[in-house]
Image (cartoon, rainbow, N blue to C red; front, side):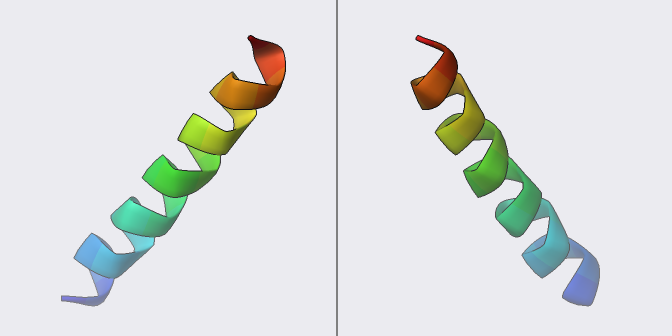
Length: 22
């Protein structure tokens, strides 16, 4: 599903943001 792909993309970006914040 496209929604799933978008969610995975968002999750990846979220993790990247957390890595920068840490």
